[in-house]
Each structure stands twice: as structure tokens, then as C-alpha cells.
Length: 398
Image (tube, rainbow, N blue to C red; front, top):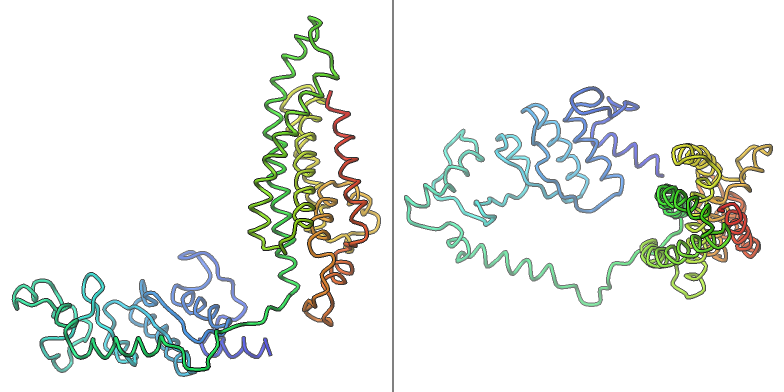
């Protein structure tokens, strides 16, 4: 049914001639401006709306291209949909394509005509002539005031009030929520972006600070003032406090924006994994500075390993699709463990059915286990793995 509807839209908007074409760059290659406008209309029609609003669909087009676009708009109206659009100085052919017109005065108020239109005169040109401020000053009237006191204004207000009042016995429009595979992947992508990019920022930003502090540490150690263990402990402790505060605010905002089921237990799991993630990213940056001779080599090393963490995180390539001889690195990527924990803690118990294209519907719990390799029963071990990651990186920081 979906493919049939797309074919219907293609025919309706007259896009068969550019089927399988690349959109390209405006003014350089690909579709023309007129074809791009028709493609935009088609994209909106795929959602099968009952009413469509268009803002100047013919702007920037010559007369021929504008006529083609408006012909497709007319085709859309003939299918029973309502199209409301603004248009400036249309030709008489385009003008006559509309079923109802609302003439606008500067400032956004409606006006009636004063002088009768002549035979063969463009209605748009006539409207601009009679509604100009010069004509108003010459006649000594205000068209907006005249319209506001007219019978037409009164009827329109009554019609608006009538259409705005629900019919007796009617109910609010409600669509039953359906869980789709794409919705789950969108959620996974949101969490992947949340932990990978901000975590990488923590790693990069802490390196410059630790590199400067290391010079001070070497000097004070030589003077007998510092020893490695207390210095490393103090350095890690202050960063952990900062990360805990940072991630609490971040988790609260992100948890609400993604729209997870609100419960104290789920929020705790979410905050725990995000906090552990940003902490090991921060400690990872500190560890590299401690293991390399200078900041520049630490930055290069950071980028090298982060690219592998990114590739084997389980988002770009799910674990079930990674070749068996490379899966060992999936388990060696801390980001993969974090995504595992975030996904399973939030939807690992969800028994709602999810629509999977080309397969039978299954529960969310079964889907993430079959297609992504996430098992809710493994969640405690994922939490323990995060603690191990932090302990191993902390040992390298001195």
C-alpha cells in the first residue's frame, strides 16, 4: 500500500519524468527550481495531509514554470485536499485556478474592490492598483475599515465561529501510538550522539589543562612537595565532582527531551551510565597525557582510538552484524558498553509490539535482543564493566 500511494503522488505531482534523479545543488546541477518546488509538495503529500499551507509556491519562477507548479497544486485540490497559499501578482490563468480569494492590503487586512475590473485586465494588477495608499488618500476612505464594517466581514466571523465549535458528541482527534523500528533507531542515535560527541569534548578539553598541570607537578615533585599518588587522586577527585554535576543537569534535560518513561529507577540507570561514560572519557584524556610526552601526541592518540570506539560502538554497525573475528573489539569499546546499558535500562523490559519492515511484529524486548544483541538480563554486568573501566583508567593517570 505504501508503494502504491507513493506512485499516486508521483503521478499527481507529475514527477515521473525525473524519477531516480538526484536533487543536486540549486543552480548547479540536478533538478530545476520548478521541479524542486514540486518535489517539496510531493514530500508533504506523502504524509497524506487533509490541508496544506504553501507560502508563495511560484516565487522565483518564470511564467511557464509557475503554471506547471500551480497545475500540480490544482491536481492536489482535485483529490479532495484543501490548499491554502499566498501568491503575489499571479497571471490571469493562475488567478482563475483558485476557488476562493482573499485580497490583502498592506498590513495584512482584507479589502474589497472599488473600481470594477476591466475586460482582459490582470486581476492581480487591478488589485494592487485599487488597494494602494495613493488611491485610499484620493478617495478619502480606509479599505480595511470599510471591510470591517461590511456584511461580508460579519458573515466570515460567524462562519469562523461556527467552524471553530465542535459538533455535539464529537471527540478530540486522537491517533493511537504505534512503535516502529525507525523510532527505536532514532532513540539509539540520540543516545549515541549524546555520549559520543560530548564525551569526546570532555576528553579533548581536559588534556590541555592536565598538560599544563603536569609541568607544575614535575617541578614540585623534584622539590619533594608532591608525590604521584596523592596528586593523581586529587586531580581525579575534582574532575569526578565536576562530571557528576555536569551529567546530572545534562541527563535531566536529555531524559525529558527524548521522552523516556518517567520513573526514578529508569532515570537513575540513565544518569549512572551517562555519568560513568563522561567520567571514563575524562579519565581517558588524562591517561593519554600521562602516557605521552606532550599534549600534541596525546591529541593524536586520542583521535586514533576514538575512531575505533566510534566504529565499534554498536550504532554504526550493530554487534549482530559485525564479523565474528572483529567482535572482540566491540567488547573492548567502552562506548559500546554505555549504549548497551542505556538502551536495555530504558526499553529492555518493554513488551509493546514494534513494526519491523519485512518481518512479523515483535516486542521491543525481543527486537533489541535479536537485531541489536542487547539482553536486559545482562544489565548488571554492564554496570560492573563501567566500574572496571574507570578503575583501569584511574590506575594509568599518575
